[in-house]
Structure formats: C-alpha cells, structure tokens
Amino acid sequence: MHQTNPKCNVKLCSNNDVPPSSVIRACLGPSLAQVFFDYTHHDTIKLLDVLTPLKTSKACFSIPSDRQLSECRFIPPTDHQIVKGFVHQNILEIGEALLERVKKDIAESLRDKIERQSREKFYLYQAKKRREAELHAEQLHEKYGNYIETVQHELQKQLEVEWSKAAAECAKNTQKAVVQERINVTNEMMRKMRAEMTHVVQSLYKDFEELFCAKRDNIIADFNQIMRGKHVKLKKEMQEFKEKVNRDLYIQRRQFEMQNAADLIHVLCLERLRNNREKHIMHKYFQQQINEFYELMVRLKDVIIAMRKEITDCHIEKKLLSEELCEVAKHFQKFIDFVFRAMPRQADYLLPLELQRIIRPDKDKEETKNIVE
Image (cartoon, rainbow, N blue to C red; front, side, top):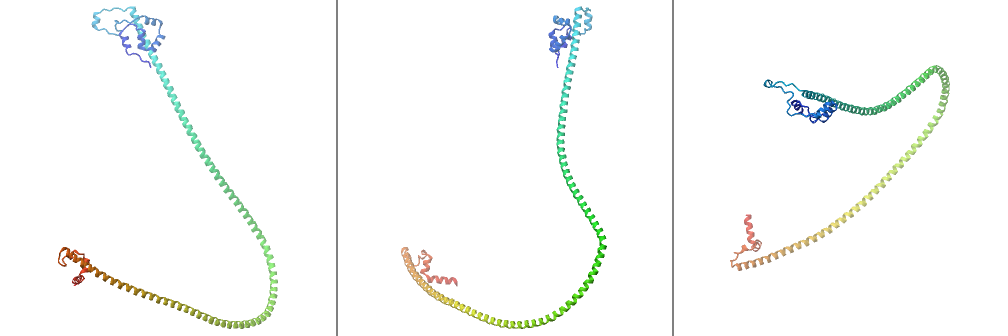
C-alpha cells in the first residue's frame, strides 16, 4: 500500500501558497501524484507548474489573538490570494478524494485477493477432503468388495453344502418312502395270500401227515425186524471178540512183564558196570594225586634241609663277622687311647654307639636287665 509523507499536512497547513509538483509527489507519492496529475484540470496543472511557494506566507489556519486584532487593521484579500486558497483547498480535497479512492481500491483489491486466496484455499481444502474421501471410499469399497466376495464365496460353499445335504436328505426320504410303500404293498399282498396259503398248507400238511404216519409205521416195523436179526448176530460177534481180546491182552501182559524184568536186569548190570568203571577211574586219579603229593613232600623236605643249612651257615658267618668287628673296634679303641693319651675306657664316648655295644656286649645286657627290673 502507498504511504504518504507525514510532513505534508504541516507544510500545507502552515502555508497558503500553491505547492509545486515535486512537493505533491513527495507528499502523495509518485503513483498517487501521477494519478492526481492525470485526472486534475489543465489549468490547475499549469498553475502548479508555474507558481512557486512563498516562504514568508502565513499559515492559512492561524487564529489571531486579541492584541493582534487591536493593533492591525483589516486588510481585504486579493484575487490572487483567493485563487491560491481555492486551488490549495481543491488540491487538498482532490488529494483526499483520490487517497480515499485509492485506499478503497487497494482495500477492495486486497479484500478480493484475500477472498480469492481464501476461496482458492477453501477449494483446495475441499478438493483435498474430496480426494481423501474418494481414497477412503475406494479403500472401503475395495475392502468391503473383498469382504463381500469372500462372504459370497463362503455363502456359495455353504449353499452348495446345504443343497447337497438337502438333496441327500430328499433322496433318502424318497427312498424311505418308496421302501415304505413297497413294504405296505408287500404286507397287503401277504395278508391276502396268507389265507390261501394257509388253506393249501393245511391240506398238504394233512395229506403229508397221513402218508408220513403210514410210511413211518412200515419203516419202524421193517427196522425192528432187521435190528432184531442184526442184534443177535452182533451180540454173538461181540462175545467172540471179547474173548479174543481178553486172550490177546493176557498174552501181551505176560510178554510185557517178562520184557520189563529183562530190561530191569539189563539196566542193573549196566549201572553196576558203569559204577565199577567210575570207581576204578576215581581210584586211579586219587592214587596219582597221592603219589604227586608224596613227591611234593619229598621236594619240600629237601628244600627245608637246604634252607636250614643256609641259615646255620649265615649264623656262623654272622658270628665270625661280629668277632672280627669286635677285634677291629678294640684295636681302634686302643688307637684312640694312644692318640689322646687317655686312660683305658676314658675315650669311649668318641666311638659310635654300635661299636660300644659290640665291644661291651655284657655291659649292655646288664643295663637292659636293670632297665627291665
């Protein structure tokens, strides 16, 4: 928005002169001044270009005091001053009108621009919302479309299953109805045929029973006659067979008894032979073991004799060695006594205890006895 110089009103109010074009441009701005110059009267433009402001002019709106009114006298204004005052007032009015118009135009343009921008933003917002709604609707449509297809597929499967079940149940019921109808027809026919069949069967049964009784009596009579002859013959054969069997059994029994006795005698002999053989083997084995034991005893006896001989030899050798050691110790004791010029047995403490015990075995025995007592 165009901004005016804040000093323009002070200058215009302090002077009654016509302002030049440069002052108007400085006060109103180049764009607003150009608009003012374009739309103002031609005489006014000439006046603004020709006239120059007077620096000593008084302020147009100054209020004189009472003293000034009493001192100075009234001077009527001239035509030139009146023209300048009207021109100045017209310029101010035109400038204010143009300023108001420009402000209104700028405000309207700004309002239009703001409205247009807000409308565009609103349209963009609505378009964005519509796009989001469309995308959401597409997603929902796709989601529920898939769900509807899945449900439709499942319902189709369920419908097929139910239809197959219903068809199977219908076929089963139809088959049951057909079977039931056949059973009913069969029962009806059986009821009708039962009376006729009963009469026929009873008549046939009566005839058959009469024939059967006659044949049975004849067969029984023939069978009894045949069985009587067979029974007599069979009884005779049975008696002969029993006698023969008893005789054969008695002979076989005697043979078995004799065979058992012979077997027992044979087994007893074999057992005695086996026992004698085992006894001979055991006697031979133990005799061999005894002989080996005797030989072992002889060898052990020889070993014991040899060990006794070695032990006696060791004792003899030990005794000889102890005597030799005792002699050496005595000579060594004498040598010590000679070296230290001591009395006999005064330097015994220089000898080891073993040598002292060897040299004086009797004294050691006495000391041990005293300790024991």
